[in-house]
Length: 354
Image (cartoon, rainbow, N blue to C red; front, side, top):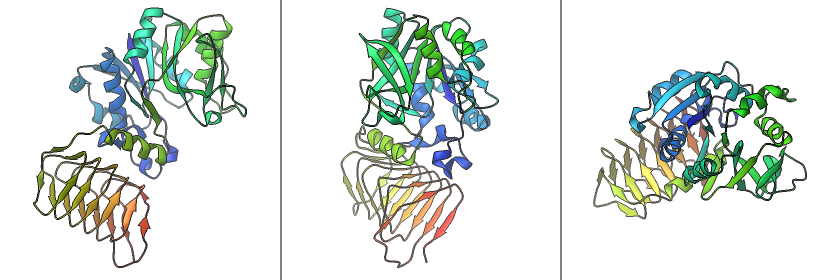
């Protein structure tokens, strides 16, 4: 079995961060989102992986390399334009050939991986199998309708959904999917939709099965979902102090301090992670925060946020929360009396509160 990870798209809902970086490389708990997908496929025994890339291909190639760090082989497949998931499948046909394959959207974070999903497909050998998750707002997703565990209908963002089971962005196919993708027309938004291709399989009386996710799932395309994924992954931590924490600092509950980091006269209340060579002084870092490498937090308070590498937060005397702060950002404070700050700041920016 081969793997196909989709890592194109523009990430418009995470701008300005994605003006200068691929959305799949935004870190969750200090690890790029894309890496979680590669690790999930490797855990399921899939070592021959194609990655669909677009405008950010060079950045993704630089970050991922040849896959040797995960003991997998990576092949990059360029999709000239983002014309839909079924179009991405057709773009990858020369790589997939006649193999069954798993397709995984690169901005997904799935706790628990996909090993059981793959094993079920290998046991039962349907034409296709889709990963489903129950949600409270199915009208915002592609919804699956089931009969006796077989998928009988897929509806994209229905106004009155007949099910609360939605597509989680992970699919298993045999080579029949290429015929299906060629048989469908472009949708009103100008894309070849994977839901239409799967519905074509269903209409041909081919077997499409489903599998309910066993852990949790997040599509990290929006800020609130990215922060929620970060919260979930941080909650899996165990305390590990590899850097320096002075005697005037306090560490509470599931805190990781990476090597070279320095913590002085500060409170770290986890779950949280402090990246390599980052300096925290006279500050409070609260739960569900991931601060990347080579950052500095001084005389400030922050929680439930993601701070990317090389950034500085200095003299912000009221708390920052629910924020995504890009690479090499400077946020400088003074005596302004705002009790809470929320930021979404792109790379290489400078903000001074006056």
